[in-house]
Length: 139
Length: 168
Image (tube, rainbow over all chains, first blue to last red; front, top):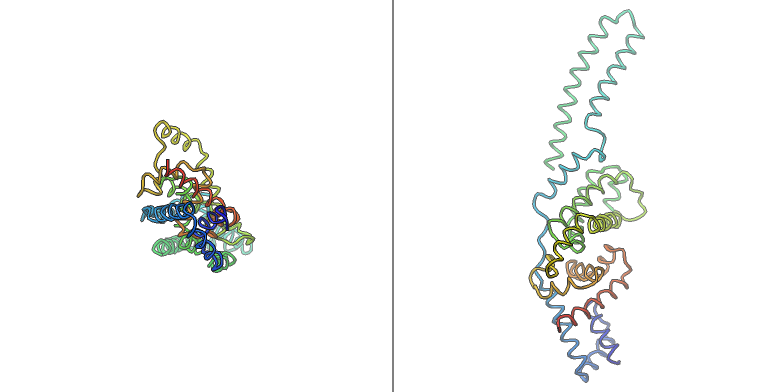
């Protein structure tokens, strides 16, 4: 093993362990070469200093809460917030119109009943959504 | 470890998939951002941007790469955009009027931190991630989308350069 190979092995050994053969050849070379011994000591000290460097601060405790807030605000990340309400009202209106067309004789009853059902189910689905969002936020 | 995320994505459980990806990768993405940006506050912002972009992209996940590799690609692009952004360049230009700043990633050894700052970008990123990721070459290679041999070669050059700088 020459000095270049030895120095490559020294640096390589700090990245991954050398095989038995490589380690023995390196030790043999270092025992008889002052320059490579010094090189190994310098690299060993550098490795220890790099390892001992203070670990960086981690993510702040509010990281996930803040991310969730951004996700909720982000218009492109999900369907628009008002979509369920619009879909609900449109669905109910469609059902009422269809009922009136099918049984025009009872239009006087169907329209107010449809409006009442729309209002009640609107509040029910809003309450259900709020409860589900609360559960998701707690998780 | 990515398999459960892949399964959640196949079942369109995007919220659960995001939570799992946060558990697995939020610190890794943060460390990657730290290696690129050298500023913990900025790195946290970029980590948030990365997960926000991921959330927007989840429905389009095509399963070709593992979710982790896919997330690293998003994180890398977000970090590079942040580095390139005009605002960030302005900050660096202001700082550059003084001595090169010591890295906020390695704050415990100012002399070594200054030497790391003087390395070429890719060597600085590789050596920073190598030590932040507890010397796992394969993880650094995955994060930076480089072959493991290239990571080792950058590590080799960075070590020689650092040793030479310390002698000065």
